[in-house]
Amino acid sequence: MSKNKWKIAALLALSCLVMSPVLAFDAGDVARLVETRSCPGGDLRGATLKNKDLTGADLTGADLSYADLSGAVLEGADLSKANLQKANLRKAYLVKAKLDGADLTHANLSYAVLNRGSLIGVTAYRTSFAHASLTFANLYTADLRESNFDYASGAMANFYSANLARSWFFRSNFMSANFTSANLYDARFRRANLSEALLRSANLTSATVVGSNLTKAELTSANLDDANLAGTDMEDAKFTAESIREAYKK
Image (cartoon, rainbow, N blue to C red; front, top):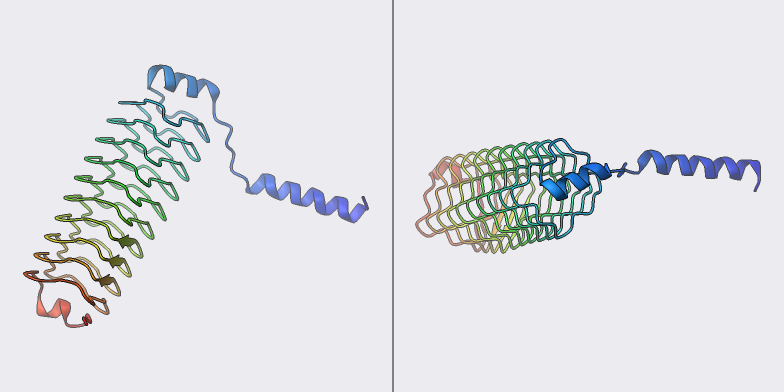
């Protein structure tokens, strides 16, 4: 190998080391979690915990970035302020789990069951909640920008003051959910069920709400500037003339 080629190869190897995530979890922390279901602040980066029964586990402040928790049972577990960036939680069972302040950026929560879970103030940028169940879940002030809620079900879920800008909701069911003061700028609702949902003072600027169900929804003082309401059923919905004046409906 010529000198120049050797230098290029060395630089490429170095760049891979710099850019690749460090996934060296602490084996002792993993063993302690499995045995005692308690590992607050543990180093569990990239750990394989697929299908593990972690009911009621204490994982407060734990680093679970890149961890595989697919199919894991985390009912009633405490994951407050945990780092779950890019973690795989597909089909995880998180009923009544506490994730307040957790970082779920780019995590996969598709098909996860989060009923009655507490996700207050979570950061979940570009996170997948596709097909997830969020009935009665509390996502107060959560950062959910550009997240995917396609086919998700979240009746009575609380999104009060949550940031849902540019999120997707295809065929999702959020009947009676609370979106009061939520930021839904450029959000995409297609064939979604928002009947009886609370959208008071919500920001729906440039939102797409096409072929959806807004019957009996509360839209008083909502901002609907440039919103697309084509084909949406708004029978008995409540809104002010000012809020809908700039929306377009075909």
